[in-house]
Image 1 (cartoon, rainbow, N blue to C red):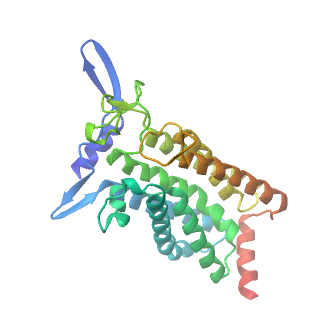
Image 2: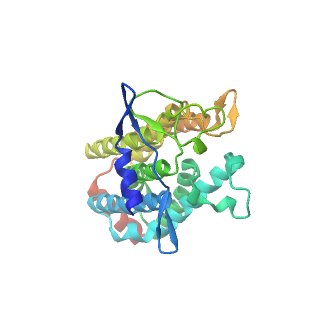
Image 3: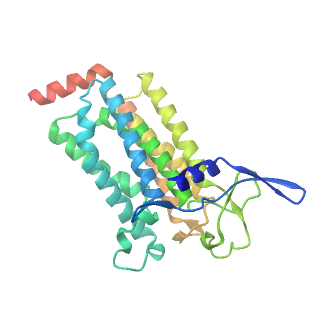
Length: 299
């Protein structure tokens, strides 16, 4: 646990004196996990577990404020989480097979990183909608309750990317550049020491966008599931920027990363979805959720 603590402290940045120049940078972590007896705990997996727990608490609070049964969140969280991990790993394996460990367990090695967010959200969404409809729960409001919590989970999960020394961008001399150990630097970049901390950019954006969605929801003007549509559009738009900085392995088309095109496409989908919802959707309120649950249960 001391290793994790040291790494989190280091993440805040350090001052190192080189000759006469003062260089501010984010150091790389000393390890990507810690031992508890014979068991090695991967920081990547631990951060995602923490993210899920925090996300469930946020969603539970939001769903209860909408008039829903908070226990529903705990009931749905395990199957939706499992679906999300499976979908995210399938997306990663399909789109980046070259970086998958070449062993029988390679396709399942989530502890080494490698989760594609769009695959995870897609499969989790399908499973979640199916489960909600089986219970007669209004899908749109629940999706809006989920959106900010999902962003917070993603933000916490990005700390795991830091410990794995992944999800960084082009070389930089900026004072918040991220130090990457030589063995983790991509081919052709061995001579550089500090890189754009894209994991940190995304962490900050995720938290900021979650806050904005919560504020928009409080206005009562966004029709469900408009907040979830804005989650898709906003996060994907940020990923367009992020993909322009990243230098880790990816499939390329017309000189651009595959996920650049996926992010651009999902941005348009999210915006079109949001516009459709606002034009044709049903205005919502906390009381409306309870009314819809009662109506659907009675029918």
